[in-house]
Image 1: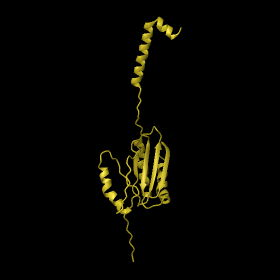
Image 2: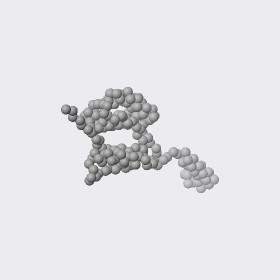
Image 3: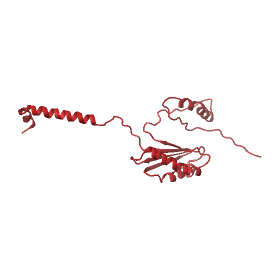
Image 4: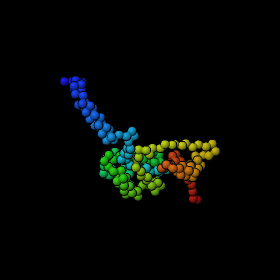
Length: 189
C-alpha cells in the first residue's frame, strides 16, 4: 500500500502523522545550535620582541633561537612558527584545540621569563599576547611629510598620534612600524 492510498483511506492517521512530523521538526529546530558567525578563538599565543637596529641574523641567533628552545618544552603545542626580521622577532605558538588558552599563555610567560636574562639588554621586553579571532588590525595609517624627516616623523607619531588613538573607545593597541629613534655617538679624545 502506498502512502497516498493510506492517507486517503485513513485521513485521521495522515493528519496525526503530519502533526507528529511538524512537532518533531519544531523541537529539533529549537535545540539546534547554529550561528552565522560563531565565536572561534583558536588556542594561539604570540611572543613579539623588538630589537631595534639588529639584523635578521642577529635577531635569529640571539632572540628567536633562545625563545624557541625555551618554548619547545611546553605541553600541548601543535606548531611553532617563528619569523626573524631586521629589528624584530615574532613567534606564534599554536596549541591543541583542547588546551585552555589562559593556561597556555601562563606557561609561555613562565618559559619566556626563564630565558629573559639570556637575551640582549638592548632588546625590548617580550610582549606575550593571546591571539583572538577579532583582534586583526582594522586600520593602517601611513604617515609622510614634506617638512619632517623620518626621525622627526617617528617622534611626532610616538608623542601625539599613539596617545590620541589609544584614548579612543574600542582601541586595544596602537603600534608604530618602521619608526626610527634618536641616537647619539660620543667620541672620546
